[in-house]
Image (cartoon, rainbow, N blue to C red; front, side, top):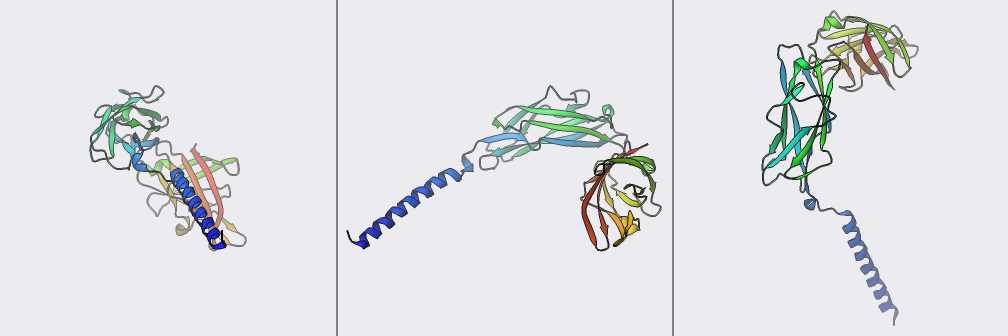
Length: 283
């Protein structure tokens, strides 16, 4: 056999092996999502239903979305009926803490991929300082039920915001340093919805807290630098301020005036990497 023919045979053998390997790899790693089953599940396994208590109304509606997944992630060709029940370990009880607004079943219409299950929350039965968890589970469906067959909804009552009620003395727990001490809060005389806290970092300095005007979304941001409130004066970099980490890092409870504060220190030259974490309870 000449060398040219031998090289050709080796080349042909190598190509054959390569095609076989590629076929195996494709079989192992390429998924045809169109062949997976359609499943029904809650959109989120847990959530918090915040609602205002003391606004003159005794109930409020809340939507719990249920969706279809799998297959080609497209809508169903026909209606899908999904039924739920209250789990045995649910703290919130049907008829006392809530009712099903339109029954325990929801229909995901043909051409759609989701639909809301509506509940009506009894606001008068809620305790803002002792929220109850409602645990629902999908018990039947026209398509296969996903493993995400339960959803936990925390029924949390909140109170209308009264800025004056935040004024006073607080016990601060510093989760980073592991210490506790006292701080005071007063109203900022020039800026609406703004509180001034003294000694939040146990250094006698001050920070400015801008509260959201919606107790259902109780977020706090810091505008200390704009208003001139300084936590402390650094020996090298000068004035240091408390600045916002993220929109939802710091929160407040409008019923008992407690707060959870997180912030980062910033100076004129930039911000420090450390993050600080505090809980405040009004005395």
